[in-house]
Length: 442
Image 1 (spheres, rainbow, N blue to C red):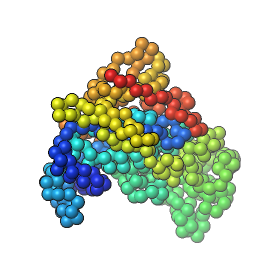
Image 2: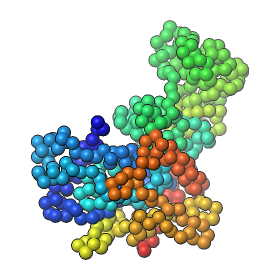
Image 3: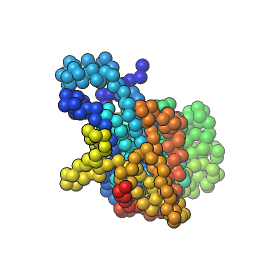
Image 4: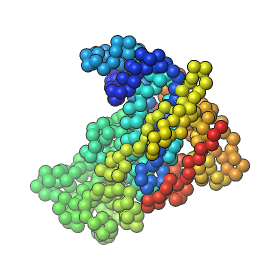
């Protein structure tokens, strides 16, 4: 039986439903929208991730006898609300940016249309997934952009919770990482997995030579040998002596990396191991990867900085009611006006405005346009790419975005999106969003 996701939420989502049922407003048709008011400080773009995971959680957002009994025993909501929850499944419509898409301040990333009760109970699960996964994907994209095509492996499972570890591996893969050390991410999402040995394996044996011989005997000379348990130069000598000049790779996890890597490359070449690769895995982030751009590194492994969003562990997204129908059936725009938390109400569409060369020049949010409308005339000097796609229609999820196939689809979409961004997007220095967000009222 699939585990229910209904309790991955906050109590006030259900108490709002309870009060709305009592007041007679629970069935009022509404449009909620997830968006970011701003990017993390100094970032030039963000990357949407988590959509495929989120759609599966929405599919499994059901209140079973176990959840209903707990709510009843703890007096969270009244009996009419318990009866409503017992029959709950999301029955509305959802449009969103495709997973892997770039986003900017005000981008309407995830638009949920349904009754107030149907839509509001999803707020916490929507934000918990999009905020974390997008933070990781945004950091990962920055790392990939400065790796100069060299593969990066995700290795952060031990630096976050067991659930976040799987989500992080998936988000990083969508943003261009080549593999993960996390087996559950491989099983659940079809991500290539990697990994050979840690320092403890070397320390287990009586000598570094014994450890390397055991690893080569198990995995062949194409394996990756960790050479910095004791002394790097000695470790490289031993690695080549044991595995031969056909050794697949060495891994370095410490030291002044630019200097150490240069020395390791020269040493390997002098020993005849000219095709042996060098992988580095020492608390890397986008800045240290960029600093190694001229070094003879062949691959990277990243952990802590990735799973913590490289300084921005949450994407800062919010989920707000932006419109509801009145008693005559007309849509009414609503918006929060609190200082520093202003939002833009109304139904919206969004397009990425491209110039004649296909380079993004603006994020255009069309206020008053129906999200279901996927047509928008191109400008004479370029074209507009429609950003919102239907994800759920009358409660039915588009399965193209789910599972391993959906993850691969998101990865491919991300790669195409990154080719659209102006070159200034890839500067690591602090800056404003690389393209402006423009609002056009229809």
